[in-house]
Image (cartoon, rainbow, N blue to C red; front, top):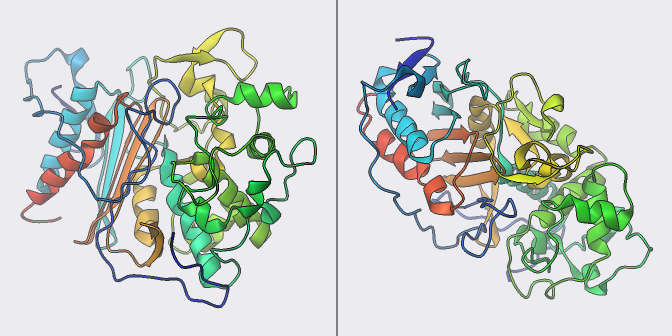
Length: 421
């Protein structure tokens, strides 16, 4: 079948002249921003930081059996060219979406650099009248951090930046009153930010990326805050720990790293990524996203998010958190991108650097990363066997394990493949 079908149901600190520490290609597991209800990016019951032990997400139960007799309204459309050899991928994805009751998804797979699979699942609109296309844009959350890390590590390798460089002089942003609320900010280095050790603990401050109203109130803004506003606000707040003394997953640290990339290169963050990473790899379809539906590309997916938040875009009352409860544009290098599944596969294939376990890895043999915002979940993996996979969805489970189990389910499906297309 082709077209649309239906299926039932602390390290050494190098100087500019010092080569980055690297390791041989190996297996690296990272877990990115896994969201939970309440604050958008995780809580104590679902920590969203990088995992050092390479642990697998726990299984969430057996996939349900296909129900060929299900009502047509309950069937999920499947779009894109059928690949008989990878039928197990369709089955695993549909079972996962059924388990989590997800409205739309897309999966793309490349092998040895060639795209061999690109499929869309579910519905392309909230009224469930049009099938989801395989090339729709989806938010990818913290997978953006892979690109930010790549840009930073390339600059270090080229001698334009160093791990022990102080970050504050590279920001070109001042706190509202001109004076830092905490002088320890001057001690924060590039390495601290890569390690999520800059001194910010989102459980002990206002977490302004997911609570933009606090920034608007503090800075007396009439418009939603951008990344520079969030930085100004945070520079006017105390740190929660001394830089380098602890590690707490920090979106804000990667907002700062994007600003470092801009001010070291003299290029806007996205333009720099386009020039050094996306365009040389022939990647199109990874863009900076927008929160309001009216400002998104026509082919960006809808976000199935029942959670309500106060609107930050001037509307009265509450709205879907995914559509107006936070400011995606303020995330920049921490999670602002939207991507097509095939484009994400190509970009992850093109990565030359990875920051993992407190060190730079050159040409990593394996990469695993998750990303999440309100109403979205994304997963990308570059495997040692030459297979790269991306799976994007327009919803998420409030706990980490059920959302992350897609990796296990797709891994099992790929292991069952006898003959690759």
